[in-house]
Amino acid sequence: MNPSNRDIFMNLIMIERERQDKKFPNKDKQKAVTLHQWNTILTEELGEFAKEVNDHRDVEACIELAETAAVCLRIAEVHFGMDVLTQAFVRMAERTSAQKPAGD
Image 1 (cartoon, rainbow, N blue to C red):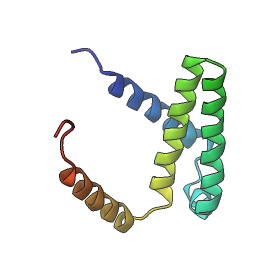
Image 2: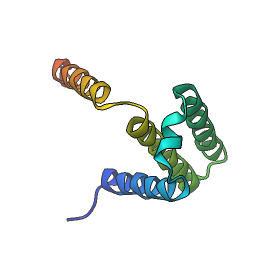
Image 3: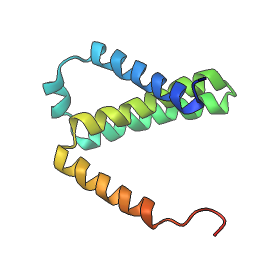
Image 4: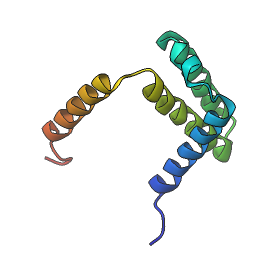
């Protein structure tokens, strides 16, 4: 079975997360970063993605998008506790079940 675009992109995100963990191994320092600081980091990554899109550099844009998604994952891992993640999961599940299929 051939991998889907989603599979490949998810692998790109995980490769970036592993790179981030090697570059910034101290989880205690990461936990000290405020959500506002994470927002700055995330915005900077999104800006890099936007630059590559504007420059019509698709491969680089894809890489920057994976890096942006990896930062999102990192924020969830180090900033939000299991209680918040569980509540978010329940709300997302409720939204998904309440949505009508397209075309209805």
